[in-house]
Image (cartoon, rainbow, N blue to C red; front, side, top):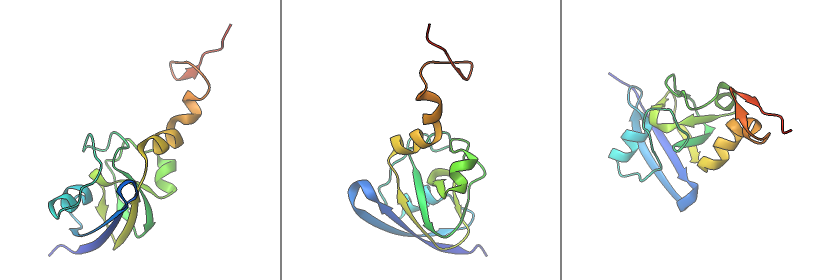
Length: 122
């Protein structure tokens, strides 16, 4: 028998809270949607940051979250589309641009990039 966890999602952009019961072997986003939650998403495969949340309490497992750096994961960010609950959980949605900036801003804030390195202006 698979254990389920109570997931509370604060959708900041719409000032709405959702609660879902999510089995440990199911993705949080899809299961919450099946229970009536209206949440942001785009790719559904862990490659972007549209469904990014900040974990307020609890733990997830997200081995397929390739769109989220290990550094942001360690700071408590998760991608709901590829996250499995490991405990009861409380999360809040994030602004995709903010998460993108946290993850990639140090590269793009320095000007043009070629082959992963900033290009010096002449």
